[in-house]
Length: 294
Image (cartoon, rainbow, N blue to C red; front, top):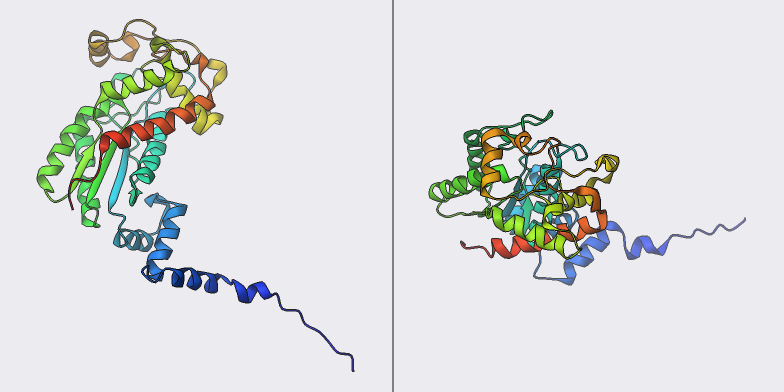
């Protein structure tokens, strides 16, 4: 009778998925297998919109008690950037900020904002300040209910800053045991962006306040396929201060720029955009600071 030989891959016994998981848990007796699983899952994604509710619950219970929320907008960004620009950049920054803060999850980005001054341009969707305030309040109430003890808002669109600041103050009164915070220094945000662009020889006028060099660079890094480089053109390139801002808020962006751009996107690049995103995330973390409540 012919003898038959069977070869069984040794690797199956050495490191099957179950065996490897149990081995990893045993390597650290202080860390329960469930917590190790949660931390492994969180390494892959910290975006709650991509997670199931049981995974979110287990992750919160394992110590991920900070929620980071970007507050963006859906509005025109010149003839070359999509209306999702603020929401997309905000989404990316919130994810990076959450990872840098540690033990944090990223909540769904608020994708519409106070953008009435952009309504002369097609595609802009604006909500009233009181509407945004209610949305922010409901976000906080929901997140607190699920066990988050720190909630960080990251507004990206300038029209949202004042509303976010007021909403945070109200949330602190309603939830005194929760650390509710936000970066609401709009001039500070503009200053860091201008300074980063200046390191590449880009002037403040080119860097711009809206859809200029630095904002375009960040979108090229994130969504290059949605950036219409063949439409790059300068917009308003004059002085920009309180008087110009008041004019925009009172009469709309079209009162100062016909194409919706404040700045000049023509020197933008994806390489610079990646640098801007990472350094801006570091800047935001430094300003947000450590948790102030237990």
